[in-house]
Image (cartoon, rainbow, N blue to C red; front, top):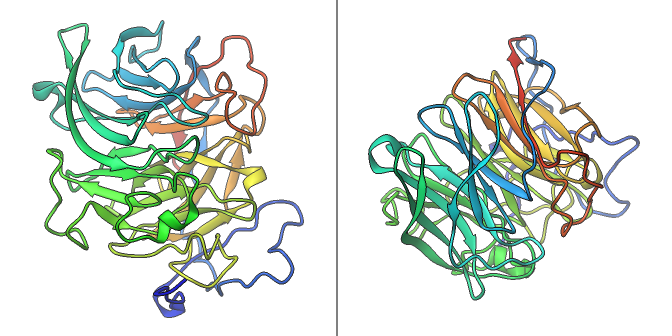
Length: 374
């Protein structure tokens, strides 16, 4: 592909974690050379036993917390947003988002509450439409909540049956970060004027921030299918990305950077920024991503577990650690609650995507997990 530059080794300090048994890069596949990992500087955080907060959800996808500690959850297929009490309990429907078109992976995806929710009552949502995907602002009105249609902040994102991305998050910079997929057309990720296969960054009113790397919403390119975005305590942005058949990735996001897809997948190839960690898709297929107490926490769909990646200063500080393998099935979303615990959203009633598992009684559910200092 023209215009693509090899990764500059001097600019990277990455860990590539080959975590599957006997797993290695395919024979004959060129790989990016990656410097050794950063040494761990202290004990690694540990997890408590999961506690069930809610059951009976149908294909839940996104989760965001409100100022009172309760959470809103989006359901991909129904288009509903439901509310979960802070201490857990029966989900209650807030409303249905209009204009949601359901496909194999599309529908109502990520949601994020406004930092000023107490006054503006605004929630942002990633919506798959029939003709295009878009990011919208919704209003939750009243003490008990009812959904009112808001405005479109960003449209023109190509839609398809699969690879929608869909994760959104409000960053510490006060802007909305959006992960998009390549719409099952890999070349979209490297096409400068396509919003697909990108990390997008916009102001909460939909305008383009002045410090974006260009005049558009595009912050970085060369992504296959981003379904996780999180921020470290120093503001470092991270993303989890589903690979094809070789490597899933965890990346540090840099303004204007190219992450290599479709020429490069994980360490298989030599273009773009190198990931700070890779995991084989059979063990991961990463979706939600959160940061808490020195580690990134990554929900795995096909891998049906929660991955922990210790990080320090934008560098992996150890190999990924798996938790709860097979215990709860697919994990779609991971978020940090106001009290510092992790809330995990399972994804076993969503059978349209690969790597499915038979729903367990009570699926889908939300679990609360304490994170303990290492």
